[in-house]
Length: 404
Image (cartoon, rainbow, N blue to C red):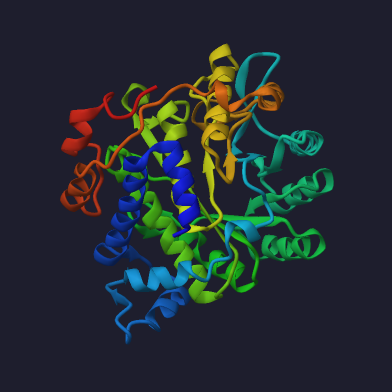
């Protein structure tokens, strides 16, 4: 642990909340050792299998069980935050919306084009407050999208890799300019490797390209309905990806890009990205990783509004101010997205950038700091690898634990 960062975090959140984060880390280690991660990918199984003789990992019925000792060994080889090519407190134009929002008509659902991607990249390049960019919207051709982004923006970037061709293009871009990461959602609920992406995850690591490991367990659906419950589940899934990267390529640059989310019963249990609770949850996730000394990339400043309303912009300001007040490494989604990250508004992007250029830490609202809730791990031990929608912790506390 980074003791200096622990002191900083305690001064911001209080000792009890930092102790909650440290216990969440221990709970995640318990999950990896006692629940394991389902996996069929041969190279990953082989990498962990080498540690069975030492008792640091066990593979049983295509589940990998990982001990705390092995996790710690892997964390010790990850290049730290200060060695990373993106500085602290960097807001990214990130995420991948399937649609563009028509700002003139006030409706979403427009299929994005290369021209939209070029405009997003140009805006990212133009404004100093934008630290880097992800895709923003999704084109069908992954390579075309990479090319357009690189043509118009020189800042740090991240992109998924889903084919050998896009991997080769990523290698070329990395060799020419650096400052680019591959993003993978390596796992899916609950504690299972997403085999659709695992092969290329392995290939990217073997190629030595920086990688972001994302995971987004949802409190009340795929994780316990409390702060430490969803943080620990998110952390466990990403720690698995981090360990995989270090076993396949020790010293490989890897980013903890897990962002815990919250199911909202008011919206058919979809994630509500506009809650202050969501912003705080992700800031806390960021601080746990900063205390571990590893690069970290979370979510914040988004909205649950369907249109570009005053509240949508207020949500952006609230999330940005909270992030600045408490500090972070990298934040995605703080500018352009609307409800459920489905529509990307270029007008909202520009408005929210203007807000980010003026917002101050003092603009952040007061929030109640959470402390460790033992019911989170009780819920994990009760539900196991199941879903949490009907768990008693969820049903008894809807609208109570997480707030607007």
